[in-house]
Image 1 (tube, one colour):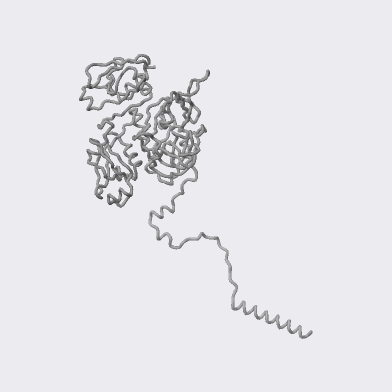
Image 2 (cartoon, helix red, strand yellow):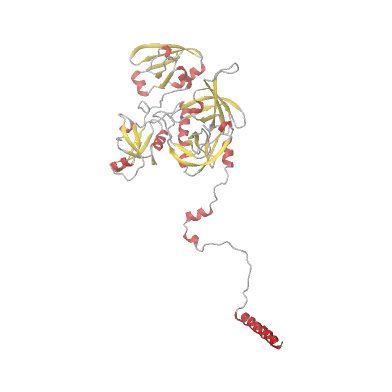
Length: 475
């Protein structure tokens, strides 16, 4: 018994001695709980320049597009068109109906849309976002860019402002606003996937394709609607999709605002696009071209041929020259080049940068029109003219001097049409309509729109003497 007591007392004493020694040798740590401060990399800002420090204080991009959508939705309209060719019933005429979108660009009712939305329409109905309905008239059409300008009679309308599509960046957020599947004022969002795309949907050599590609959902009915940036500025007119199903599959295309602005303004002022021509045939610079020319890049356009007497020949451009910029804006390929030139009119001077013999050069080129002058003329294909079977243009100043006359030149006459049945021939110069002197296509269009019934066109042929009258009924 005494043995176990001794062991217990000895163990207890040893434990106490150990505790005292531990407390003496290892004093207890004091723990203080403080407010937690955010971590920081010491000295980090000392390595930043002023521009980088400014970026640290900038507000992040908006997390929604409420403001941009609100600015745009009121200005995008629903367009319903009626064209001939449908099945006639006892209740309706033989008309086909289709739909699209449009963008109000001025408070007095001018609306931009696609050519393919309103082409061949016998009636155009416009519904605003507030459900007011109007009948629209065509102001001008441009199949080369798939743009059209129509007008409704109203005022104080909400409208969008054209933005600068050149500043649009790949990866930037954009909104598509339109009426897909007749769902009025639909807003979808996406990013800019690419710029200066050519998808070969515009027929003819004169087609200008330099589309903005986005992944915003665009479907049938969106055509002619608005593509806007995050600020609500108009950066494009929606025009097309690539689809196997007929619906949205991730690729949509819009006409750049900078090109659309020029085309729409021309249609408003002249009824037709005043397009400047440089007079060359080109293709995208290839790796083989670059190797043969000794160049260290494969971006630009290669001149295949220069037309005789053209603006390019006057500026001493030659075949095998490689154009790399227009007015200091890079032209990486044919679409970007044709878009840049498409923004100018006859008589405008553009600076062309190009390579010849591995040396970069620049030259100023004065653009010309389709008949190789600097006058503002172009072939007019207004619906009221094509329905009669005629294409017209204004006389150039040189033609007026050489023939000592004012008037309008007949470009073509459709066989078996209203005009064709009068036996009028291309090359006829119209001087008068119903004894009233006419000097421009605009005057002729206005007369034909305002007067129905018997029309007598008088004029001359350059190579034949005498005055020739042609009579027809304008229905």
